[in-house]
Amino acid sequence: MIVKNDEAKGFASVAEGNLEMLFIHNDSRGKGYGKKLYQFMKDKTGLTKVNVNEQNSQAIGFYEKLGFRPIGRSEKDGSGKDYPLIHMSL
Image 1 (cartoon, one colour):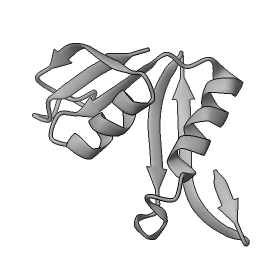
Image 2 (cartoon, rainbow, N blue to C red; image 1 turned 180 degrees about the vertical axis):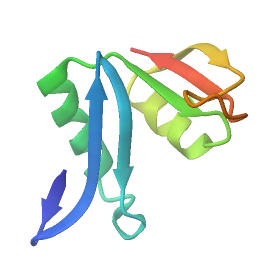
Image 3 (cartoon, rainbow, N blue to C red; image 1 turned 60 degrees about the vertical axis):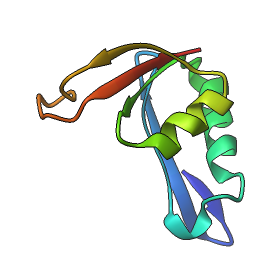
Image 4 (cartoon, helix red, strand yellow; image 1 turned 60 degrees about the horizontal axis):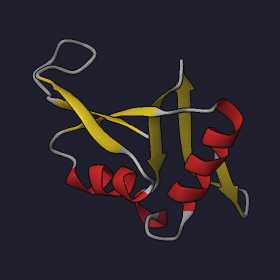
C-alpha cells in the first residue's frame, strides 16, 4: 500500500512473479504513485509478468511505459469470465 498524509493512495499484490493487482485511487492518478508502487513491488518481489484486461488501454499503456511487452492473449480472465486478457512480460 502507498500512503501519503495518512491516506491510502493505492495498493498492489504479487504472486509467483506476476503482478496480480495494482490500483491507485482515482483522485491520485497521474501523480507518480503507480510508478512508485510498481517499483517498490518489483524491487521486493522480482516480478516479471502482468495480465491486463484487454479493454483497459490506460493500464496497457502504463505497463508498456514500464517496459512490459505483450507476449500472449487469453479469451477469458482467471475466473473463466469473458474478459480477454493481454499477457505482458518484461
